[in-house]
Image (cartoon, rainbow, N blue to C red; front, side, top):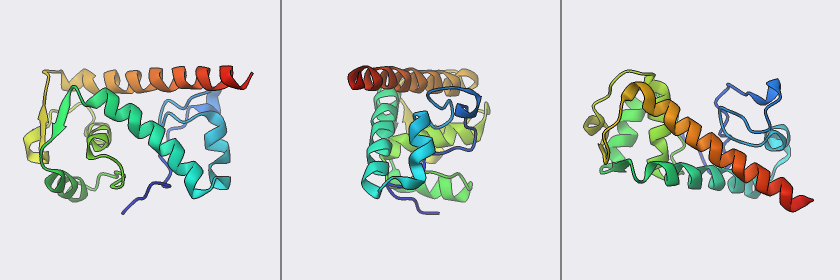
Length: 146
């Protein structure tokens, strides 16, 4: 399934239904999730741009995509959803989410690791960093509105 800049980043594990201001799954604000169907393509792209920027910030010091085409092919072969319109570095989030805690041979996906890490904890570390960036952005956003 090809995705575009306006495709929803929803992962189907929304925590805003439990009162979170920022979803622990997709990292959107609660009002963005609620209003997503009403958003224009440009408004959706703005949200995806912010999430893409945060993911790249988190991943660029840890990984390098050396073969984008191989990475895309392997994601498709393994039926892993990813947004092909975003920076390929962001697809690493999708790969790690789909892999659970199993070790992967990243080279088979056209990726190199720039740091050593534990496959059992890296997904949680990355998600926590992404959530912290989103929460901080959310606080700045509402602070600027008042």
